[in-house]
Length: 280
Image 1 (cartoon, rainbow, N blue to C red):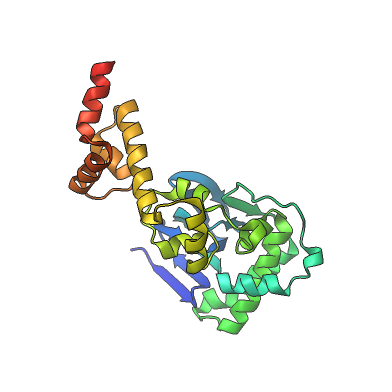
Image 2 (tube, one colour):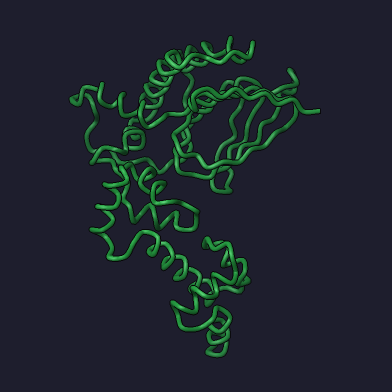
């Protein structure tokens, strides 16, 4: 029998212990630091394997991705232990305000790396050694202590790669994500307007105001139109089934998809494919 114990405190700290290989899947809405204390782990982002994390290794994972994790026990010890620290927006905002702006690097571009391996250092060792008593006895850390540790973790990430300034502090004007770029890459997911605002580093009111400058239609209608456009392109250029294409672009109901497609293009999805086939 597999034994899985998970401790979650204030949505900041999660420690897990398991005796068999375990898997989990989730959408990461906050940046996170992942450390493997015992065993190993495979990290997949949006369905692709991007990193194998060995014992005593640590990785930083950028937010706004679908994450799948496979936890493998240590062959010698017979169990797996890992720790995940999340970086809540509020703590990042407080950390940013405490920085001396004269020491913030200029002309930093956002790194394209979704997963960043944290190099070994005394800072890394001391940070996660301080967590050992908590996962060993199953005790939940206090919120104040965790806040201090998250600040240490932020220092660690910034020290590893200066480009992470642009990822961690994307709520500032100079590093705020581009709305349309984000939506072009995430139109297929079930995101509310509140989610879109959060993921693009804006308040809801600011997101609505900024989006109006970019489009005359609402975010919901923009996403619907984009899904239909991509669906038509795939229907006419590939041999994949219409049901699979419907699912890939974000529709859940086939009847709804067909109605929306007909209303937008004036014909059914199957008619579009038949027309393309006859022309060829």
